Image (cartoon, rainbow, N blue to C red; front, top):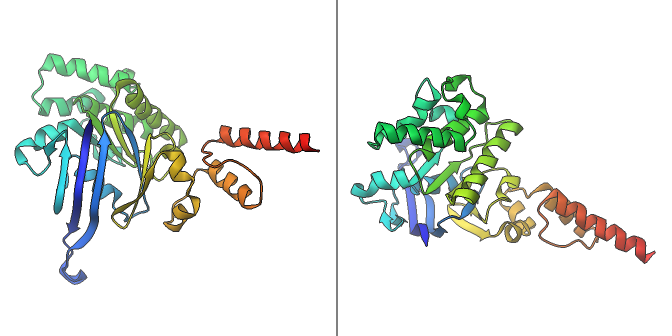
Length: 288
């Protein structure tokens, strides 16, 4: 069953008078279904429309044309918006923009309190959410003293405490060091695989997109390519044409194939690359 459906969605931004005053088309005829429990990666260079699309998934933005449905609820229906935002939580690029309290556990409690959850249930949810993201021991710490990766995990815990069915993450690792990125990605992957939470991940890092069930590539407000990571990243020249990279092992194998080395398509990881090269070298050795 679909948790999110976009049906012929268009979206215009109103421009300033000095820019001509004409509406700017940002999303054009988007048709998309995201299934419950799916992990979807959304790619595209800056200005492709991916963040604008993601903000339609929890009614932060409303379509200028077409409809967005969340579990069958139309985001344009004002009476349903509260429930839609509880169901689809959003994690932003800069965790400082989502941390509102001076103590970690109070920050995580903020969402459930606004939902009118009882104090006893809030206590249970806060502890459970912090434990899920590996931050329970920091419950009485000041958020501003945490590392970037820890702050982002607290932001995710704040969303989890609201019991969402889907989490949309808008470049959550862009401002983090490699360790922070690893912490956040492992948390997101575990939430998807162990708890069945639907994940929509906007990222510039191709090795993060490799973890997804499905990859969507956006260009000029449209969905240009979609498929499994293997299907999408095998289209190296098309991705380069819209200024996107591919995972480094994929890039290496593509370049070697261009030089006549018979390596298989669809290689995504360093391990797969090493195995394919090893098999090629063994075959070449046997041939001699």
